[in-house]
Length: 271
Image (cartoon, rainbow, N blue to C red):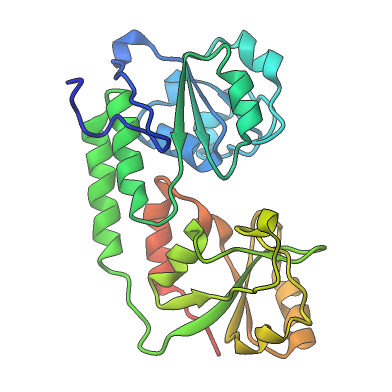
């Protein structure tokens, strides 16, 4: 791998040195969707640590040690596993934790996809760093093929994508989820009644007057485990269409986003 490849710079501008598979990198990943991506890049045998939320692909990750969650990492356990590389994400992992991990993990690769097309540079980044760029290019081709098949609704819709209840939480328009929905011409609702700390994932109240502009409410199956019963009960409460959607398909970047684009293309919203 040539050192001048354009794909070696991560989300915070760190320039990484490529490693060959013969160097036997020891990779820890704190991002569920990227753990799956690493496996799809053929790197499962080099993964030495994952979070308890890194559950795909099941048959490959079951034997990889768990070191806590995306935010509550067991530092001592991870240190004993002696990773050479750590993969993190700006939204999912907390900087103070990553700073502590950087004291004993030589290479920290930071990711931050905020729109679907950012998957392409992320595929290539990890492919270039770990010497599997040809496989990364295959994933890019599959992603671009599915992206071209996304239909744009002739009549735009205003949607409210819910990720949590008690309190109710949604996403802002600059998140990956909202940008994904925008591919179909679905605009995520945005309230003005938010604090700075809630900017990307705001708490809202169903009494908010601006909710009258919503055409459809989407309840995501993750991170909160919304069910069809939740959807039916909420629809009776707010008198608006409510649809249960697959949160992994709409919010996970990485290789799952390839199937996610097909899911989005076929998703129908009743209004």
